[in-house]
Length: 283
Ligand code: CAA
Image (cartoon, rainbow, N blue to C red; front, side):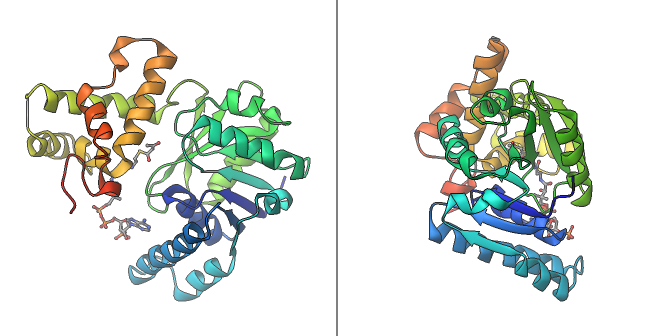
């Protein structure tokens, strides 16, 4: 099945990155959010990130203009009904995502593929709340979306092979690489990454090393582009904690117990870069 029109739900950091890469790859993109200010901010952010690519001569000014021309926004969720593929990138709360899918489903064409950019919520459970679990998948981008090469494709228990193959082709069209994962808590990336970040927080909590030592040990000692605490601030400490809770609850193993220090930071509202304070101070 050839797809041309893409719906993106949620104009936050992930949603605007997803709209960016689809528009640059030649797809028509309709971005939905509940706030006009969020849509305006997303369009400005996409324009700024495309400018960055123009200035590095990764793309031409004409390619930027064409990509911007392919992006439209709407506050009205049913407008996404005529798109061929929907990627939901709303708040990482199951009740929010399920309510969006329930509202959207009556307006969809029968052949539209529904996907979620969730980083850890069960695809099978989200799919069960729709009329098309066989046409439902996890389509998980990494942050920052325009830069990171990977997309995790997660099949729910009912996802059919045609849907998977279509999404795989879309990932290739974006110039990215897919890793296919079965639907278990955290999928592949967060099953491995989050326990490492959580262990880095334990290493700090137990006084084994300070923030700078932990990050430079992992950057210089294992060639990671960012240290684990810097990366946690970049992802958002609330997101890290939410994913650890999904692993802890879903796999019922104490090795996934969130570090009390991570919980304390989140309780303090120290969420990392987005709140200007986390393991580092960005004020
Ligand atoms: N849009 C477009 N381009 C961007 C960009 C954006 N938002 N952010 C950075 N870039 C580009 C820069 O222009 C630059 O391009 P060139 O290579 O063409 O020069 C390149 O990315 C590198 O950026 P910088 O030079 O500004 O900075 P850097 O070298 O320090 O790299 C980084 C920044 C790419 C973020 C790098 O530090 C990195 O890879 N960090 C790790 C990120 C990571 O692990 N992400 C996954 C998080 S886990 C996740 O997302 C899943 C989840 O569910 C939680």
